[in-house]
Image (tube, rainbow, N blue to C red):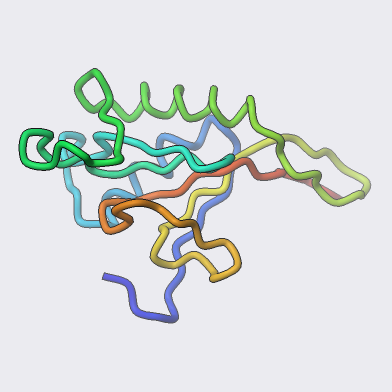
Length: 137
């Protein structure tokens, strides 16, 4: 889906995370919520959403399945709780406000310096990490 010069990254306040997740999964070709995230992995301060395969066919899959039907609002709430427990990098000094938010990226488009060693990364759709939000004059 992505060519080498295209990047998908969205940052925002926690309240906008459900829309960002929906956008990431639609760009990945999933059209309904039933096609959306069915599992996750955590690597450091990164929360990775992906699609869990059938456990009977792939018993050693490193992805953790959600114990409920896919609901982006519930998943977003879980991710926000996770992000709030992580250290958010400081925002720049300035004459405005700074608060914690998120950065969501498609793993296939992450810069090499930010790449993660995601087991079965071909199933990953979105990497979400803490990100400073700032509004300056």
